[in-house]
Length: 345
Image (cartoon, rainbow, N blue to C red):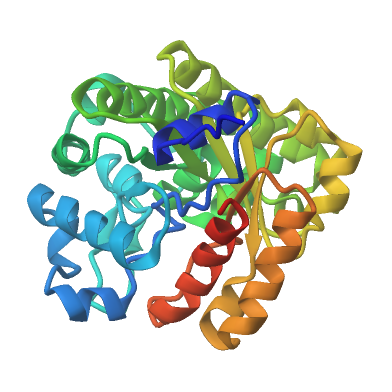
C-alpha cells in the first residue's frame, strides 16, 4: 500500500479544502494566538518587542517558534495591535514578557471616525514588517504554511473607539456603527490583500475576541460580527486564500449562527465541546481547542491526554484554545504537538 507523505503546507491546505489527510495539522495561527513564549526568546536571543518592528528579526523568531514548539506553521505577527495602530490608536509594544496593548483609542464615538483612504492605510506602518517577514520566511521554509493573522472587524473597531462607548453605540447608534464597521472591514480587506501580494501567505486567520456571543448576544452577533466577518471572508477568498476564524468564549447563544460563517475552519475556545459541535454541524471544519490554562499549568501527560481525545474525536485541526501565556513552557507545547504527530506515525 502506498503511503502518502504530506508536507506541513500540503496537510493544512488539504484540510482547509475538506480533503483527506493522514492526520490533523497542529498549528498556532499568530496574532492573538501566537507562541512567542519567553522560553524560546531566551534560548535564541530573537526577542520582543524588537521583533514587532524588524522584519528579519520577526522572521527569525517565527522560525524559532516553528522549530522549538513543533507547530506546523509560521504564524505572523505576534500581536493584535497593528490594525488599530494603522487607524490612529496609540500602542505600547510591550516587553519580553508582556504583549503589546492599546494605550489610547483614536476616537471617542463611532460617529467621529473618518477613514478616507483604506488602501493607503493598509499599506502603511507595520503591515510592511509583517509582509516582508512572511516573504523572508517563505523563502527558506517553502513547505511550511505561512499564516497571517488579522484582528477582526469588531475587535478592531473596539480598539479605535473607546470600547465602553463603542458597545453602547452598537445599540444606540446602529447605523453609525455599521458605517464604521464597513470602513474598518475595508481596511482589513486591503491589509489582507497587501499581505498576500507582498508576502507568501498560505492562509489568513482572524481573531475577533470582542465579538463573542456572550458580549453581543445573538441579534447583535448576527448584525455586526457575522456580517462583517463574512464580508472580510469574501474579500480574502477572492484573493484565492483560505480563511480561518477564531471566536472566544461560550458560543451557546450564537451556536445556530456558526454554520453561516463563510470560513474554511472555525477555531473555538476551550469551553466549547468541539466533538459535539462537529457532530451537530458536520459542514464546519473544526479547529482547537487545547486549554491554554492546561498548556501553562498542567503536566505534559495531562496535555497529551486532552490532545489525544481531540484527535480521536475527529477534530480537523488541533491548536491552542486561545492566546498562549508568554510563560507557557516549551515542553508543554511539545507534549501537544508530538501527540498529534505520533497519531500519524
